[in-house]
Length: 450
Image 1 (cartoon, helix red, strand yellow):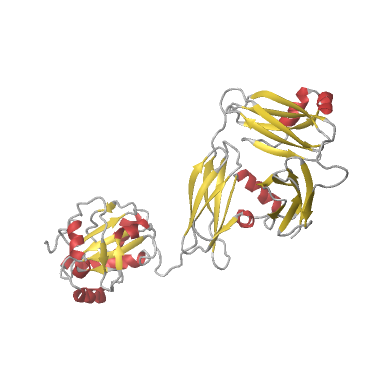
Image 2: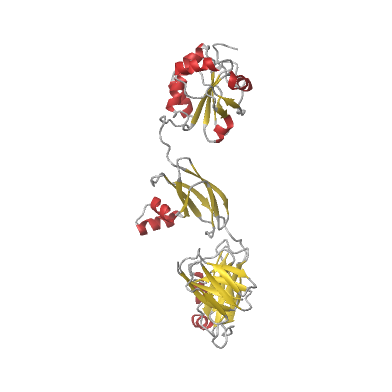
């Protein structure tokens, strides 16, 4: 063992170890590194002259980097000293960071790291790379500070407060969905997440007179721990910004964190074709299912009376559908309500490929029928209570299928049953008008009022 020389650690990648410092604290190297901190290790022994000269500067730099509370974690390891000698050493030089000696596995660690000269000061990055194999000579504390700041580490005051932050990790991105995982730090009890395009957020900021942070807090999802969220129904080939707004226990906003994700492009270069299936439900409503082919990047479809179609002409009717402002990208099922009884309609669909070229126009004609299952003015089902709150009970004969739609004709849920009485939970429904359809043929309206 050399008493006054210094030589670099021969390793370039850290080896994990478990140790116990002189105060009985258990230490695992990789646990610290995997937590995101760098680790500075001062290999020393108490009777080493250069070690005694260097330690005041190590202690001073330890304070400059926040006393193990921030970017870097300090420790020192002796291969030959027992706890009593190390207690005296720490008291003499004011060492507050973990000190490990022979009783805490110090000799074995020094051997594993190939330390042959003392002091040897090394720095290990969170990815387990040894980025400084020997920091020498140590002329003052600034020598260590400069070496660590060159690695991107920041100085902090000891006992300083840590701002709440949220790490955003973008996961799977498809043409219409974005997945992101959010990890708050220990200082962040609450945070809000939101995803939108920058242009949309700028528009809302002007319209509502709110800051970006206020909009994220107003409209975002409130979370309290690590979570993964998937946004669906997004526009293909579009750049979105994912926002995370950290909030402390007093409700104060902190720096807004952002990451961007671009949805994938849909469609190919071939001809876009939209298949439309129409099912007439009763005299005023129909169900449609639109299915785009693989060449389709975007499509539009809707209903138009045959009379109006012939009045304006096919070209104008197609233009009206294409410019409806509601692009679709996947299979769409929709229930159209309040149609005109005994009327001929066209279901019209038109799409474009990835090059923006419009494909074939699909026309499906149908006629709204007056045939229903209600006869002689007598209802074949009963709904109770109506208005409903926590549930609504459906009673009738030969009930096999129950479908619930909102006021916009969107399907909410569907049940299959053979019971003559069936209770539907409605506590999660928002207040408003809903429609219940029995066996795809009879429709009744009900109201939710909490």
